[in-house]
Length: 393
Image 1 (cartoon, rainbow, N blue to C red):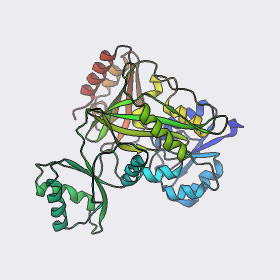
Image 2 (tube, one colour):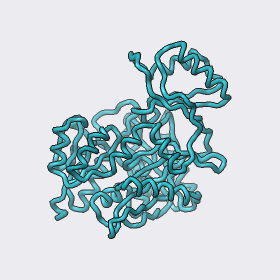
Image 3 (tube, rainbow, N blue to C red):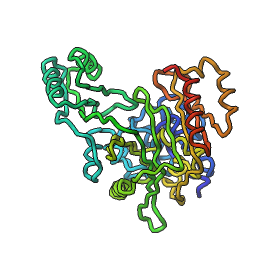
Image 4 (cartoon, one colour):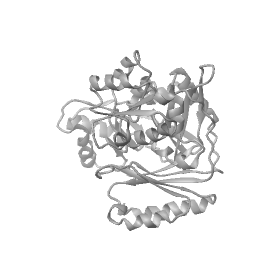
């Protein structure tokens, strides 16, 4: 049966490509829908559908040729997928996708399940009106706190969010905020949350699956320690000796997964400050911070996701050794100095991944480097060394 089994993937980026590779290892076929005919996953798929993500005819074609449907990012219409759940197996649950697409809804979800969130300022929309914006500016000044203003929908990797700090001038605040409006006079839905001066960031990657009794169970990876630069993930580490008491947090995540009958990988990001863990955001999919699991774990996040949505057995993920990952963001020194690749590939237990995107764009993820080392300090030093070689920013 499974040798004629097809997984349909909505989205043809690097995440879709890495999911497809894991499907191939099990003899499964892959169909990919993406508007870019040069998308990385489309180039290696068995069935290619070049169309936008809101085209009902294209989605119905994908459903017709697929045994199960999954998606690799949030730019999908959740209500449309919910409708098609009546005719097809679609994982993860689009209800969680709908929540994850809206920063207000995902904060409310976290609160509902007892997960701590940053303070929220009670303004949920902003009009492109100088007087109203000045009124908001003055109210924020009176709090003596620093804030981050984010569009409730549409932003990722630091897009559509600005920081408000107490010494911010109104002129600069107003100028930054104009990027939210473009030429529109319509109010913009936002969430204004306290800026946490965190000690460190981390993500928890969980996998929901059905056991032999068709009950939802959950497996967790160790926390991934994340370092961002300009709002984009730059480095991730997973250490054998890193201990963080997240058992209570994992139980709350498990409750979310079970309540929503969630099948597949779910990623939640957190801030840690003074022994308090604050929820930041979540992604109902495989995640950039989990890339080091390909070499660093016995089962990668991509394999676990494929296993879960096809009802293959899920086993406990185990970190094999200390692991680190460095993202390759576009316009780095590697693109202008290919000799750097020779230097990278000489490093023991260093793994180079390039996604095959046709052209660089601002802040585009082009690839990543993973590194394994029993010596934790050497691992950190080598990742930092590669970062300085590859980046001027």
